[in-house]
Image 1: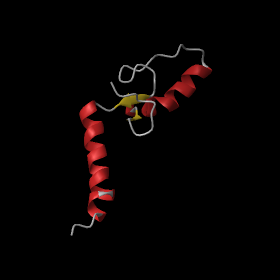
Image 2 (image 1 turned 90 degrees about the horizontal axis):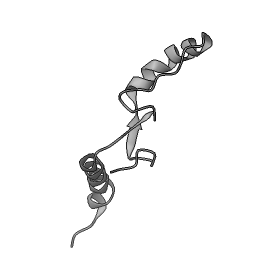
Image 3 (image 1 turned 180 degrees about the vertical axis):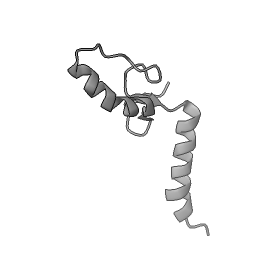
Image 4 (image 1 turned 60 degrees about the vertical axis):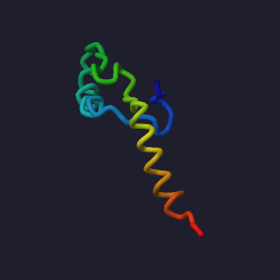
Length: 71
């Protein structure tokens, strides 16, 4: 399973991004912090193995194979 904490192996959780402002207001009033159902409170969502493979393949096409000179 890809590690979402590694650079490039995940993305920020969009649900947590929407909740940040509401959480700031909620903690002022003493409410408990609730974990996100989307990322389970980590703030990151891991890419699947297939997504990591597709991203790496696209980068290789762009930076390596596009500049290779064939005789």
